[in-house]
Length: 540
Image (tube, rainbow, N blue to C red; front, side):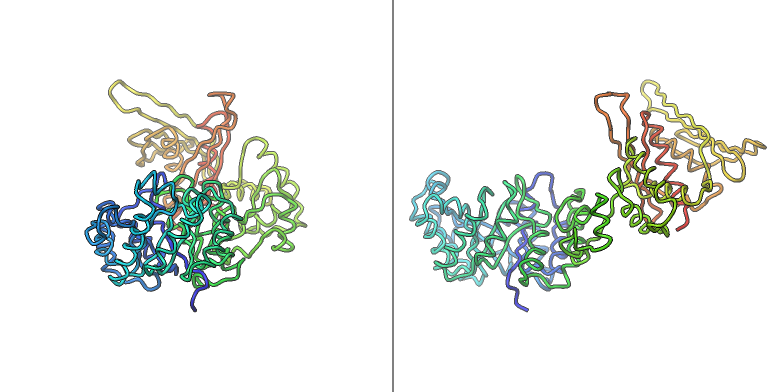
């Protein structure tokens, strides 16, 4: 089905100009293949005249077949005073071998006179010459009107003349760009409507998010007649970023009821968002609309109670439509419904009639008051519920521990830890340092040795605890610590402040988080470590 709105992705070019983003050639090829599989219509690969990396990307991309998307090379109009056929930058655009070429040119009289420092007539010639030359070489040409809206507000007649110059030369699309990202939706809509009424070619929109209006401005332009929208995955881009396609795409499909990407691709939107973040080596933003982990998260007790009865009461769509899921959060704002839904997610047969429900809720609120946070610590949450429901002792407990750090001048610090644990087969003690650990059963002192390391005090403590427990629970050998975060809860207390430690663990099949809180960072770390091991042993 022919789309009513075409999606043009510029993550690999405009998005890569964002702070902290640096794609290798291999990264760009992987993202391009993912975008193609998702079903976007254009993938802008970069500017072949700007750097060797983009030249190499296009050389590699020629060898690949894209099933849905057309690859675009990006550049500018010819230089002033240089015939188009002699302009090296234009030559490289053709040599890139892409079916689509996107060029930008000046719309604003201010930029013509102060940046290009040429006559208004020469700027019109630069636009027309370049578009015609590319069309003569068989290219599908998209003309991006830089500063289209600011230029129109400054001198409407000249701005319109630049757009008409591109159209007359054969441009397939004239794309209006809010390059500074400072316009409001009403302005965007009015000027887009003018362009649609005065031009015969198709109109597109390219917005930036400098005042937080990138997506709103794109949608306003589409509502006014544009049929092509440019943006980036997750809103990557210079300054505060570009129009975020992970918001635009579902808005077009689910809110405006217009066709864009294939319907089956919508359910893969969150996956695409997280994939691009992963390749860019960026932590996924949980507060992204539609695809963030918080997009369908519910915390307030009244909200959760309503969602439990009628999901649409506080959810504008079914999260599964974009590959997301509902997330019930647990905190001191929680009500009974929060606990019931979260417990059921964790595998407990809990209902509103469970007698222990009130105790669970009160305990969580008290723990939250003390500084614990269970939103990302489902392992600790499950253990809390298990202890209250079953009233039974968990498989082990730490009776005592000791950690020391010493350093001799010129040598690395030596971290040592000893842990005494009680299991159902007796009391055991493990001493661990940076080289090895010593294991003994205190009742009969039958000693056993095992390897261990201690790159830091927490690592040494983890090594000692793990060495003790794997003797009896070999399945814990598969458990690894994948992340470790520390948060100071009361900064005014200085080094005596209470500390929250969040640990993320995995056994290769599942992942879970655990939390510990104390004025002592080692104690908080041990709490989270113990919970991690106990949760790994907890049967569903």
